[in-house]
Image 1 (cartoon, rainbow, N blue to C red):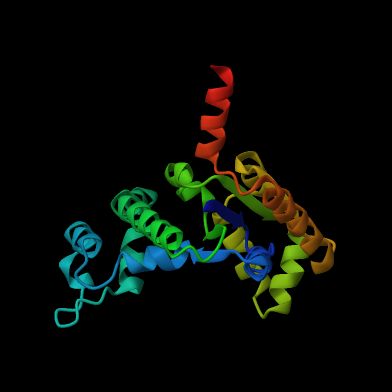
Image 2: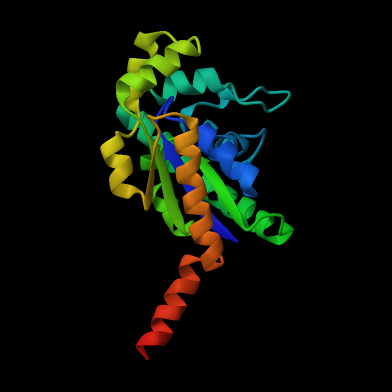
Length: 217
């Protein structure tokens, strides 16, 4: 199974790309949901977070994490945010590996698309996938889209500052989809990418490496 990360800033069209890829036959994993799952009640990750940020974060009866309180404590300073990331990321990486393995065993799709909310936070997980895709669009176009969905423009601007820039995404992506000319144009780009891989037989990065090593012998 071919595995890809799909990244993009707010209102860039990442969900649209994922939806189109699903319609072509891809399976889909939302890394944000994977991240939330590692903080399930009484999990090893939840226990580690409570030891670092306070036992009162977990409901004494249900074990449910008070995520709002955790956010206030963990993101009060850059240092505390980094401490939370250091705890969570190994658990998220392990959970993603298990989710990808489950998709591969199921054999439902030739490719699995992992939607990544913040690519700069998961650089350590890049070895788990064969390719990184990103979708970009001009900031003014994204702002108009966000406003059309009911988002306050000031809220949009605050969120954009906290996300990786398009320059960062471009520099870390194998393929960039440009989403400023409408969904029909975006869909054509995605179909071209899909068709090229389908013709190549969805050859994984490890398979390519083996082939290249064999050719050099």
